Length: 59
Image 1 (cartoon, rainbow, N blue to C red):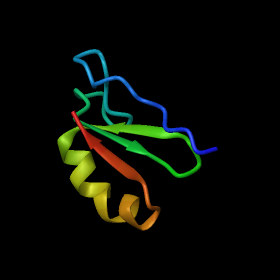
Image 2: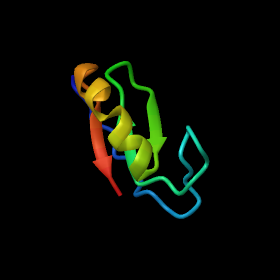
Image 3: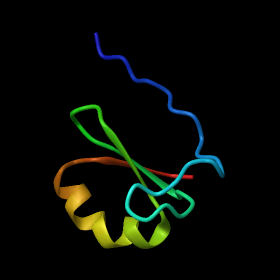
Image 4: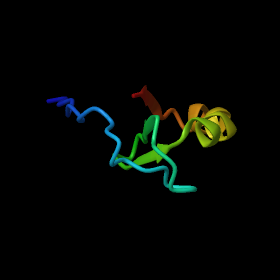
């Protein structure tokens, strides 16, 4: 059975894992982990995240 978990929308309390700015993108990794990025760091790491087949959710 394939279950998709619904993740809550990003809020002002969600912070970028790289710099602490407000998170604008959630990257869900195939392994089940997730990373939060501000717009700047999301753009910086977007190519690698796509290589890893991460699902990107913009908030």
